Length: 285
Image: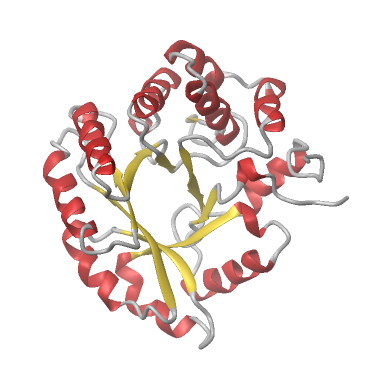
């Protein structure tokens, strides 16, 4: 079977191998990422996600002639990001993006957002993703992000779609509302956590129902084409694979609207689902 990655899936999955639940050792993860970048499905894979707390360990793991594209995850906070970026050897490691939570649930996201925007002003070649809690202050934060983008700052939103507690899993209506809010502001977004499979499913061990990444793609396409919250929520909630496959299949050669992508601790998992569903199988023009 002749295989390639349709444009609609290009860069969809960042390599989050060192993050839970996979929690791979950093040396092993770098070797595996190198293999992903050399594989036939390389176009599916985004940058290697590196915790800021591990910047002092990455330099020795890259080859002299290698430039590793990374997304720097601010696990040590916004204030520590400038030092983390400065600590990386640009000849060995190329920081494509920084991602950081700008507030905890229930906190005002504006101070953290201002701090991130200030830092990004000094990094003209680095994209920023502000992780905003889906709680109080969300819409004002999206307004601020949209205003910054309109002013030329390469910044976008990021939302959490899973974790170790039920409240970290937004309902289909909640996620649909935030997708439509981003659509209304022409604001790209990323997602993090919980997107383990293509189709919405319930984890038998935890009882948590996880969003499917193909659900998110179909819902985002619908939103970008003018769909309202109820229509998008219906696509996010369905487990009917046929309804989700068709939007991706018919738009295989198009750019993905709004949704930048998500991180996965296992690149083979989303890849396997896409192959199983016939969406990566040489069937696109």
